[in-house]
Image 1 (cartoon, rainbow, N blue to C red):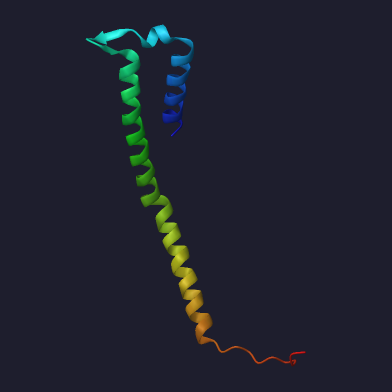
Image 2: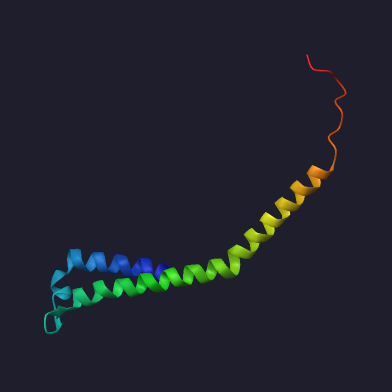
Length: 90
C-alpha cells in the first residue's frame, strides 16, 4: 500500500514541480505524464486486489470466529433462566 501512496505522491510532485519532465513525448501525442496518469489506474487496481486478498485471508476468518462466538454466547444466555430478583422494585 505504501508503494501505491508513494506513486500517487510522486505523480503529484512531478506535475507540480517538474511539468517539463511529464511533457516529454513517448510516441505520437502520448506524453510521459499521460502514461503515468493512466498507470495510476493499474496501481489502484492492484492495490484494491491485494486489499481484498488480505481481508479474505487474514481479517475475515477472525471476524467470522468472533461473530460465531457472539452467537454462541447469546444462545447460551437464552437457555439460562433469569435469576429471581432478591429485592422488590421501589
